[in-house]
Image 1 (cartoon, helix red, strand yellow):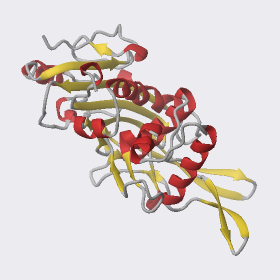
Image 2 (cartoon, one colour):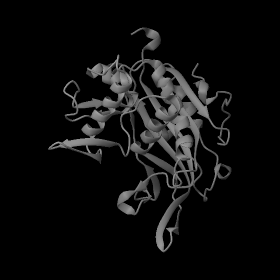
Image 3 (cartoon, helix red, strand yellow):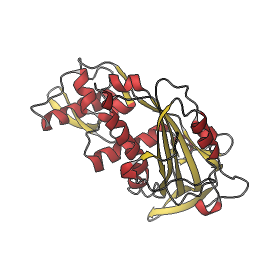
Length: 312
């Protein structure tokens, strides 16, 4: 692998807003937006990965293997029935089968070919179980996220709805949440998974664009908007820190939109400047709707993320 394609360790900070929506329903609590014991919103890493995977497939034509509601065939005693895939191994087998049917001259027949064929596995990993004999039972993902959490406390509204005559339901929505995710890119795992630098730059785009674009496909999810994204790429090893500790918002009043607060990023800039000798690049996206306490170069578009917070 040449130097232009080699991946370096990175840390990610991603901030988006959720307006009058349910960013991540809790099935153990009547699908109410998830909150922690202090009243802040939580969003699982799986929810974010779902947005990314769906965007990869829908807008970038990338094959993905982890999909919801996949139907597979099962034959027993000569009788074939259709069922929803419940085991991960069923999903893996189905994905490989469909891929091989479309790529007859380039079929998947090895662990390496599997990783090269499905970027969502190379990014996020999977437990394959006994899906195929040439696969490992477990693949670690090069990209890992902690749960997302809101910077402001949740204000949730509950409405009774009637989608069908004489049938009542409950619709519970977060009025406004500024939600931050922290993640890391592990260079060694990325290399093992046959990812190159271009794949990580594509991931920047997937994260930023997937949340607003894929959320509009669901009535309960519409209302998401990407506001701020930073990926700090280090020269060599790094000492991971939750980058959310360096940013904040004013939570002394109720917040219903970006006009109600200023996002504090000066501590993040100070962290970057203090560590500039170990930092290789900083990739930044800033939505102009988000007001910040220091001026940020907003000329970079999502399609061309590049250094904006200078480190030299």
